[in-house]
Image 1 (cartoon, rainbow, N blue to C red):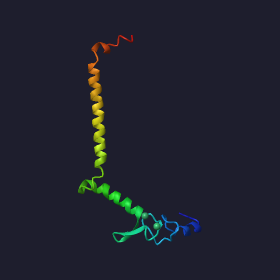
Image 2 (tube, rainbow, N blue to C red):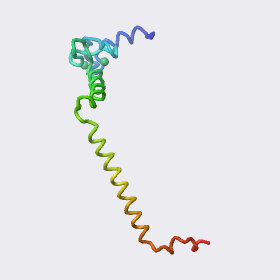
Image 3 (cartoon, rainbow, N blue to C red):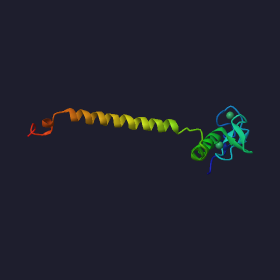
Image 4 (cartoon, rainbow, N blue to C red):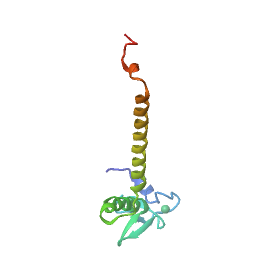
Amino acid sequence: MAEPLSTTIDKTICLVHPHRAAAARCPQCRRFFCGECITEHDGRLTCAQCLRSEAEDAEGLGAKSRGGRLTWLPALLQLVAAIVVLWLVYYLLARFLMLIPASFHDGTVWE
Ligand SMILES: [Zn+2]
Ligand SMILES: [Zn+2]
């Protein structure tokens, strides 16, 4: 990617803290960060944003095999609750319709 030289120099400041000089560059997203924003993880430098997205990836992949932190459980419970509520609404609606006299369904009223 061809960029003007001036903006390249500007990028040697921390992406999060524009008033701080960049201490290191994240090898993954190739952006510059100060010493506070970049951390060493598994023997290599990673910025906080990449570290977070990596953790999310690991969580998503490992949730099934090692139990994970069950972050999917609230979503599943919400889904089950939604299904139960829907079922209940249809059940009550069906019961309500059954209570209506059969003559009401004949359709002769509109013809
Ligand atoms: Zn990064
Ligand atoms: Zn910073």
